[in-house]
Amino acid sequence: MRITCPLCGERDRREFYYRGAVLEAPEEGAPLEVWHAHVHLRLNPAGPLEEWWYHQHGCGSWIRVQRDTSNHEMLAAAPAATGEAG
Amino acid sequence: MRFSGWRVLREGLTGNRGWQAHWRDPDPKPEYDAVIIGGGGHGLATAYYLAKDHGMRNIAVLERGYIGGGNVGRNTTIVRANYYLPGNSEFYSHSLKLWEGLEQDLNYNAMMSQRGILNVFHNDAQRDSAVRRANAIINQGDDAEILSRDQLREMVPLLNYDNNRFPIQGALLQRRAGTARHDAVAWGFARGADQRGVDILQNCEVTGIRTEGGKVIGVETPRGLIRAGKVAMAAAGRSSQVAAMAGLTLPIESHVLQAFVSEGLKPIIDHVITFAEGHLYISQSDKGGLVFGSYLDLYASYAARGNLPMVEHTMEACMAMLPAIGKARLLRSWGGIMDMTPDGSPIIDRTPIEGLYLNAGWCYGGFKATPASGQCYAHLIATDRPHQAAAAFRLDRFETGRGLMDEEATGAQHNLH
Ligand SMILES: Cc1cc2nc3c(=O)[nH]c(=O)nc-3n(C[C@H](O)[C@H](O)[C@H](O)COP(=O)(O)OP(=O)(O)OC[C@H]3O[C@@H](n4cnc5c(N)ncnc54)[C@H](O)[C@@H]3O)c2cc1C
Ligand SMILES: [Zn+2]
Image 1 (cartoon, rainbow over the protein chains, first blue to last red):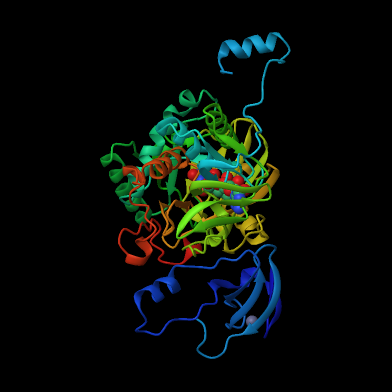
Image 2: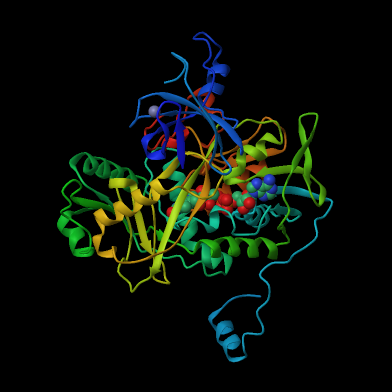
């Protein structure tokens, strides 16, 4: 599996750390159910999934990747906005 | 048809013409008392114990593919009871006891082999944790021994004891652990359930779960609507998708785990051996193939096929710990889809929908659970009360934070357990 880093180009999966699905973090004071859903529950689709990868052994950027979980196909990759991931 | 030594002899002398199919291939009935979604080890065991322990015979197991095609036929067949945390540890202890009588109970040769498991450690911290685990296992009434480096060396001379980074210091041994022929376990439960009247419906995918006023009434399949007042999910890696048919979102992420088998060799590995280094585990099948694996691929996947980095990692770990097998050729490798929970432990519970039950989250360790999972799930479905051995496997533990069983202490990130 290869991932296209927007800064470095196409690189081997080994250079990246996987964080999981892109999720919107709740407000600090959000109700418990909302935090529970954020931390534990996952839509877990068999198909396109938006997720965070970190170019650990490259430029050190967090990348928002669209990947098809049913066949490993990379559909899109964009750099994270400031403060968005991590 | 019962299996016996006498029967094998008679069939051998008469051209093996008397063997029959192990289960029927019936058409679906329009209605059952209970329907189980998923004909893997857990679904089939559930049907078997529903019929055997609770006298429920008007039930069906619905399998989208064929019996044995899921993880029950893809795993590395390790059976053990060396867990640590309360809730998990009694359950796996109960399961190992069921395994010990399973072949007699099913009248089926599952090739259960209590060859012992050796969890090898490489440093003081790992030794401390192995000793602590051994004490916990002994306290619950199961067997555990700590072997020194010399004792281990006498038992298994072939390991690389002097690897520079990961020297071997000893091992935790559980003699009653071992392996079982995984697809025979599926077949044995399928046959046992079928003999008690359960309909096993292969190529029968559940495509929808019908509810009415918060109560389940049946499932949709390409072979029509099948009504049932009780519907029990046991879909392993596809649990999220099946639950979504009833509008439920689960605390599960699906990940791929790979396994490998070498060409057949003469007997060289007598036990199941696991290495704390690289998470490697290896045993030798009765055909002679070395069966081994290590980590998940570590990203969400439904592809049932892994990627090269984890293949390389696993081979490197083999070469580091067992250089003697370096010349063996790899015969096959494959992947299976794991239903990973945020604490790495399973769920056997009711759902917010009346009559709909959930058995999921077995991660990479559900094969050893098969008999106990089936027995406990059957108890829940039949009586609406949890079986004592699986009472900790609650769905709401993630929401309340009470009773989490995080064996690896890695926290709420699905792929890290
Ligand atoms: C490579 C690998 C190695 C492993 N090693 C071990 C080990 O050494 N020891 C151990 O204890 N565990 C191990 N495991 C884990 C173990 O295999 C699983 O936890 C366990 O098999 C899961 O339960 P099951 O047998 O019911 O799953 P499965 O056999 O996967 O059964 C689920 C079934 O549900 C069916 N299904 C899904 N969706 C639908 C639908 N919509 N309609 C109808 N049917 C559906 C699937 O087709 C499948 O047959 C390993 C797993 C893998 C992949
Ligand atoms: Zn980069």
